[in-house]
Amino acid sequence: MTTDTTRSSNPAEDTGTPEAEWRRWPELGQLPHLDLRGVREAAVVAPHPDDETLGFGGGLALLAANGVRLRIIAVTDGEASHPGSTVFTGDQLVVRRAAERANALAALGAADAEVVRLGLPDSGVGEWETALADRLPDLCGDADVCVAPWEGDPHPDHEAVGRAAADCARTRGTRLLSYPVWTWHWSSPGDASVPWARARRLGLSRDARCRKDAAILCFGTQISPIGPEASDRVVLEPSMLAHFARDFEVVFA
Image (cartoon, rainbow, N blue to C red; front, side, top):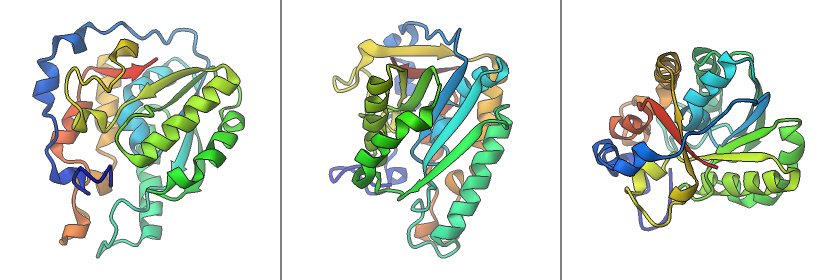
């Protein structure tokens, strides 16, 4: 995945900020608690298959366990995760990654979640940001909370989706929760560009944490090499996945 011109074109080639460094940061453990009581319907916007699980999988498990109606708005199908792969074409990756997401949702206890696939171009959402912002209010329907990537999350698709979701939330007057994904990799504790004052901590039950762990393992195309060549590389290295093995999640509210 490309983030910006000052960083590696493949985040997996950069070890990023170690999870141990985040765990040593006292402020992370002192964030205000996120209260999800009263949520009846949630729309969760994901730039790529796996983002909803990485950023908010524990939250999805908790909401599903409480009978909350869930809609996953899948912005892209993730076809560009392995450009030049010797094993899978982009179209084949679309099929594989859709199946991975379905299995992950089942692992989270959210097999009944409605999935709306928009099919926007992976790594090209920015060109469709206005159109996406126009569609999201209808797609969110009667949801009383919209969960989407943080608009400052350092991946172009995440930034575009985050901005579109923020526009949607303002238009509808909907509560917005913004989850970071690549922020944990590229940023560091206390980074002034991150809105820590808006950060909230969602504690996960043991069941929710175990479900999230199992869901992440469903994304085989991302956590394991899909072939022998460099173009078939792992996308989510263990150092990255460590950020999502916590007993809590962080969103910006």
